[in-house]
Image (tube, rainbow, N blue to C red; front, side, top):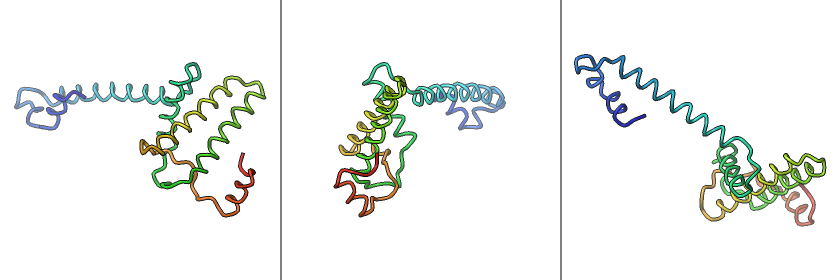
Length: 154
């Protein structure tokens, strides 16, 4: 919304027939601007939420942004590096399974989602945007013991 329109809408006196501008005109302009912004927002969300597979680096960055916005969880602060490890292994397994099944598009997407998870882990480790935090519970002693033996989650 233009700053001028916002200013006019914030001051009823400036958006009043007594000031020479009918209230209806301000409201129509505001409605048009809101409609434009909603369409722009929908287009940005569609871009963010559409898997990309052609250009690996830009697709991984876009997917990392998507993951932070879709799967971010502020209540999971302090997650273990093993939560990231399990997530990345799970996504890599999905890529491998899709490739073995002959679904190349899905395999490409899962390699990108794996790279994006690594990018989000890197951001979390480096003190950057850490809205994405995998896992909701700390690992149990049994899970940690299993992990140390090289077994456990996919």
